[in-house]
Length: 114
Length: 117
Image 1 (tube, one colour):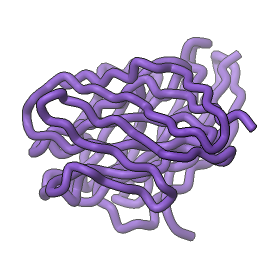
Image 2 (tube, helix red, strand yellow):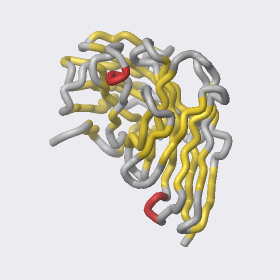
Image 3 (cartoon, chains in turn red, cyan):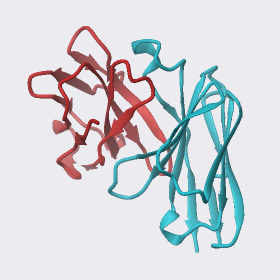
């Protein structure tokens, strides 16, 4: 089974500063990778995903993540954060061909400081 | 209405009560899931249904009883719960499972916040 590690449980950052949220997974088999965002009192929303092709994937609100197979990582970055980015961010992994098996990290709480 | 809808959003129950959580998806998906979200823990997969058939029961205590009458509806029946069962219960759905990369995307509901007294 996979394990997903989000080393940073809390990340405070000033508004308009860059941020990186780290995600590492355990297995080197073929995987699909996801970042989900959870705003207060809401469920998880898909932010971006890597399924195949280009290793750099982007969301519509300025986040991007890069799949690094050799380092088994899928770090999330944004060059300039906004107050509205304050939320909990979850990294998730699914092994290709396993259908319904998704493995989630413990989440990173991003707080943007005005 | 679109997406995944969960009711109730908040539920407070005693240890001897019987209650149910409801989930409905309007996405035409064929797989539905129950997850438990507790503070500072990874999401815990509880149950998976593919085409109304249960395919995963992740060692969940019998005080949690799922029901999937069709591909659009999922219930979680609760009875004689413990205080440690207090958590956010998330329902999710995905397209036909195991059918390539497009199948592996979960859509979540807003969750049902359960408090057991």
